[in-house]
Amino acid sequence: MKHGKKYAEISKLVDRTVAYEPDEAIALVKKTAAAKFDETIEVHIKTGCDGRHAEQQIRGAVVLPNGTGKTVRVLVFAKGDKVNEAEAAGADYVGGEELIPKIQNDGWLDFDVVVATPDMMGVVGRLGKVLGPKGLMPNPKAGTVTMDVTKAINDIKAGKIEYRLDKTNIVHVPVGKASFTEEALLENFNALMDAIVKAKPSALKGQYLRSITLASTMGPGVKVSVARF
Image 1 (cartoon, rainbow, N blue to C red):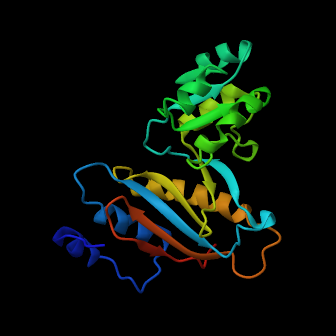
Image 2: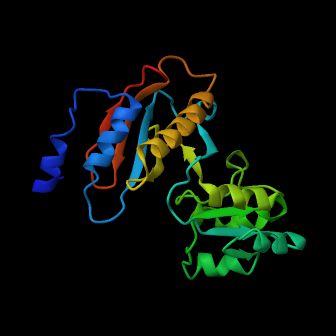
């Protein structure tokens, strides 16, 4: 991938051979986020897990204390009085069966997170081929299949993020925006890392966390020391 002059300049600020302490890495990432928009700061965690084995899968959710800096649009599948509850809690869209053709046939995907009550999973299951590959399928482990739709919506709007292994056994998650203070980013980073450390599969032999990299949308990656985790 070819990068421009600006990228080459800011890359000089980062020593690729060094694994920085989290606070130093965050300060560097903020410095190297030089785009004209408010870049997202992401963490990429390479694990020693083998996601092909169910007992080595990592999946869960954590509420970042300072949110993600992004306005999240929530779609809730519910029926009966849960529809009113979801609307009252601030869901952006609420519906049931009637939304299936809209998503399946019309390609409507104007939402970031899907929540469903357990009694709606039969309906939502029919959207597996559409929602699954996009990581939008509701999941009990992530707290998005629940009767407590108010709590689910509040958590998501407050900055709840999901984490899971990709096909290469890496976890990619946002921890805020470049406009956040270093303290806010560090608090978010620590909250995420606490959750990841607790999620270590008991079946895993060998090293759990292989590498941690912080990067802004357009900036270079900054290695973080895994020693303390």
